[in-house]
Length: 166
Image 1 (cartoon, rainbow, N blue to C red):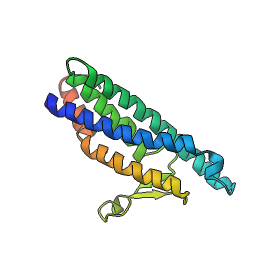
Image 2: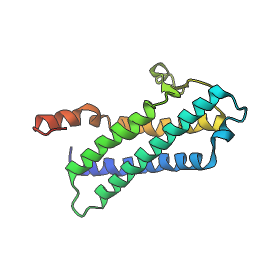
Image 3: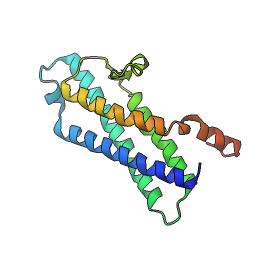
Image 4: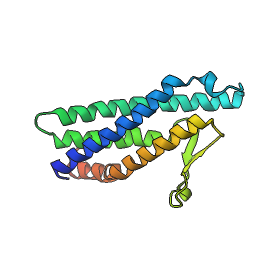
C-alpha cells in the first residue's frame, strides 16, 4: 500500500477508535454492576460481570491502539512499516476483542448481517443501555473490520514472504 493510503487509513481508524472510546468511557463511568442488575438475579450478575470485564478490556485495547496511531501520525517522517504494524494490531486486538468477547455475553450472527437487522445476539436479555452501547459499537467496529480486512491475512502473508518473523 502507498504511504498516503496507509496514513489516511491510520487517520480514519484513529477517528473511529476515538468515537468508540468515548462511548465506552461514558458507559463504564456511568454504570455499575448494581445499577445494571437491579433485580439481583445471580445469572444476570454473572452476565453483567462478564460484559463489564469485556468492555473494560476492549476500552484498554482501543486506547492503546489510539495512542500508537497518534505516535505514527505525529512522526516527522511517516513510517509506513510501523503504521501497518499498528493497523494490524488494531484489527487483531480491538476489532477481534469486540466480535469475539472473552465472556461471550453476545455474539455476531452473520445470518442477520445482510438483512439490515442487528447482527449482534445476546446470550441473555440485557438492559437497554447495554444493548444500545453494543449496537453502537458494532457499527464502529464493523466499519473498522471492513477498512482493516487487509490486515487480517494479507499483511502477515506479505511479511512472511519478505522473510520476517511475525
